[in-house]
Image 1 (cartoon, one colour):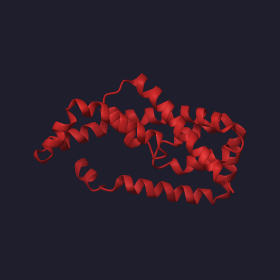
Image 2: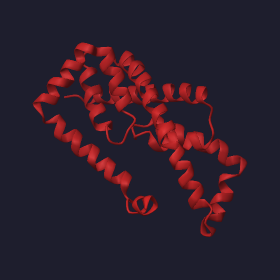
Image 3: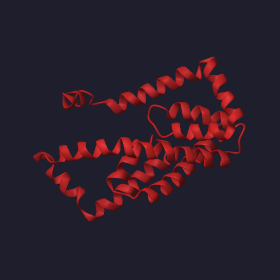
Length: 187
């Protein structure tokens, strides 16, 4: 029963991206949400941490971007990126533990089928173990949602301490780039 339900959601990630954008647009036009975001400014560091935690998910990246843009007017961009990066690590860590286990099982189930045997062989080469974290790191450092990057790093069996340090550095850099780009293009 669960397998049939999972297969019926082939475009689940695309739906999450669209839903997240729609929610962010609707919230950005809502006066109550604007007041909430401005109120987060009074909790500047806590607000930055929360925005960082929201920044890593497909569903909440739009909301996080609005919060970060608002906070960038009140907090030093570097300090904002450092604090939001710490929040993003918490978000990535949760993603790693809740999503990654299911993804690994799903991949193993699909790779054991005959038609994907060559891909299964690729997963067990020595090159694959170092390329997964590199691709995952690029995704985490980009403004894209982190779910795929975290999953790739988890599949590579990266240890927790390495993951946390790398996630913090990459998310802080990615958030800083986003903040500085927003400040550069502000009217």
